[in-house]
Amino acid sequence: MKRLVLLSVGVLALTGCSASSSSVEPSAPVTSSGPAVSGPGEYVFEVGGASGVVSLPGTPDVDVAGAVAITGAPEPVYVSVAVDNRNGAAEVMPGAVNAYTVDGTKITYQAACQYLNTLDDASLPVEDGNKIIAAFNKVNDPVSVGESRTVTMVGTEVVPDDIVRVTVADAYGDEVQAAKR
Image (tube, rainbow, N blue to C red; front, top):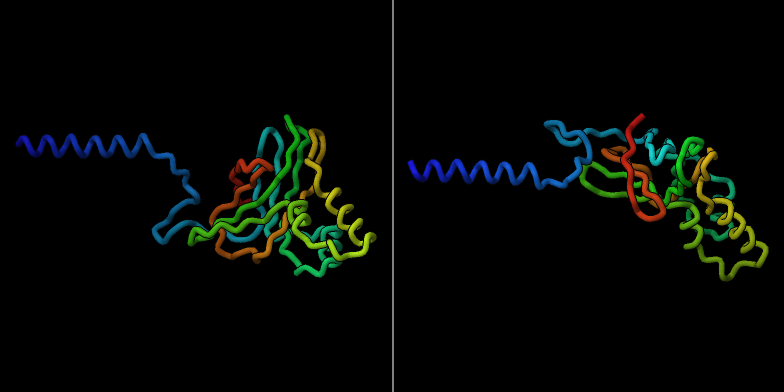
């Protein structure tokens, strides 16, 4: 009888411990066959009174595409983030969109300004270098309070079909969950 009581106390302690100390955030609804796949499309998010819509895949930014073409770099995959900050409390600067797949892979699409910084323009004529700088300056600004516009993200991997979760990270790496529209 004494062993049964000790076993019951041990089970209760384990149950209480696992319920109260869990800090794992669920990444997607789990079904009997695994996480629910939401796939490519539009995802909505909100941060500090601003709202946004992520389009996976997105529309190429003309200036970024021009800069990429000048350098001869491979054409990136574009993701668009439409930010409506007319009711926001602070400026918004998406730094990345992260797509998580069924197998746990994280695919990151970074802000176009970060991508443009990685392009090799050292051997280009000054005129072409200035075009890349102009494209960088155009996509480098945050979305100010009262403003509404689209921010371009780029990556090297095709948007996967088995997306189970999407997050939007700011320039500091803080992520907010986006929900399928």
